[in-house]
Length: 234
Image (cartoon, rainbow, N blue to C red; front, side, top):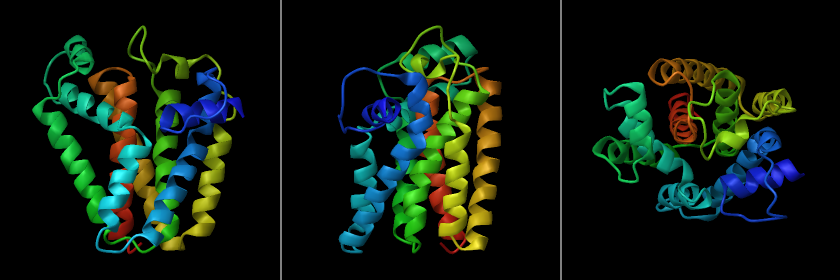
């Protein structure tokens, strides 16, 4: 429970339980927080008129996370597309000012989500995609080293992160039973391909991952999976 509350307090604006933070255990709960966010997204889709639903849903994802991942997306885009060396890229991520590439990245990602929300017909997609996107951050933490000696994401890179396989297996099972088979296979293929490519790119650019890059991964993964679902008829 402490891990879940730590993940909930970190990934959302919701504040529950004691202030004690357990980063190592929180990672195992990222998927469950994602499912909670996805349930809210599906509820908004059901409650709001179709004419404004895409805008409301995009705003919901921004607000519920406190724009945490969008900030990471902005900083990562400015750094990774800067054509500078590794140390300069890391320094750019520390800059509090938004550059052109960061603004462009935010506009593209939010626009892509809005377009997808206007066409998605399968409610299960709205529940599962936020969970899969947050679990993608956990996979990145497992596969890549932390690129800084210190930072906001450092507590998540503890030596032991128990129970990380279980959320992945459960998410896979939920997706298998909740989605039409063709849609399940398509989304799974896009998800695994996207993860493989982004982790390879991160390793090539930085040799690891930072908290900003994890946030960027979450945002882009959401947009990619939502668009994939639309393209696959979901």
